[in-house]
Image (cartoon, rainbow, N blue to C red; front, side, top):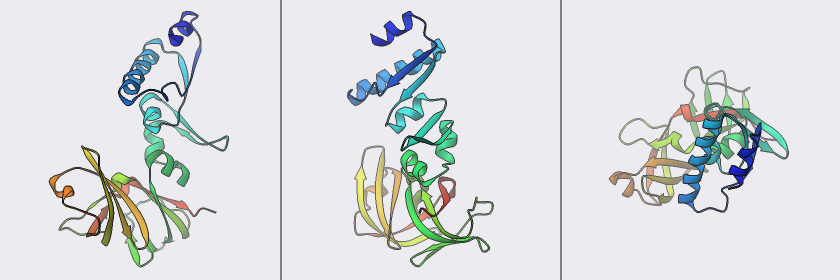
Length: 211
């Protein structure tokens, strides 16, 4: 109703301040779709404030991520998600695991607590030295019988949510998170098991070490 009243005067700008925060999940998704359809059909520039990353990704043509009153990064959703400019953006928007490690740029290697990983050719590198490796949950998978990047990781937890399952692992003294499609094989993997993991570097980024 409030939106209808606002549209009567044909505004040049609409401002939404967390309009869906008090709705249940089903109604939130329905209303989100209605807002998106309305914005696209009217063409009115819309500023939408939200803490829900999925909501922002779904509705926005451009997202500005705020931190302590400043814009940390602003870009199209796909660019923000795929190319985070900082560890804050990688963790906030992509739910990335952050691992403090050391980079040997000359040899193209990163290492932490006994784990050494070669970086793929052309991978964007900050200066050699202490760096932070950001790994999105979808960038970690089970190696199965093939070659692995991280052997001997220990399963800490498993959270089944239907179509997907979230795992956490302990690897080289660091906790990793993986989001995988649920299968009969993933249901057989339980906490305490030792598994081998593979990284998809398309879902990873390196950043200068946090200070």
